[in-house]
Length: 90
Image 1 (cartoon, one colour):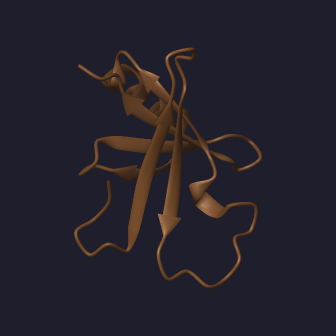
Image 2 (cartoon, one colour):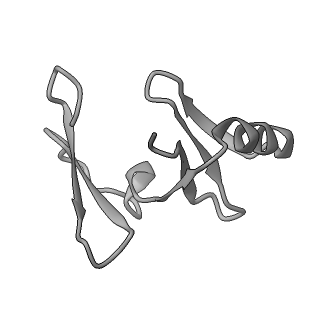
């Protein structure tokens, strides 16, 4: 998946032996090196009650980025590493 302009693409890998999924992002045309992976290196959690978690994280003041169009947001741990929060699949 990715935007219509093809500037980046995501590929998802998973298997039947694990409940986890690996997402690989390719930023086409990028020539500069990543610093510790940049914002693309993060862990994501799927949450059952997205709105409740959003309210909690908003109250905690730890939301660092929201993507309303994709229905997700990021929080940061004390060291600044991003954690993606996504709603559970229906």
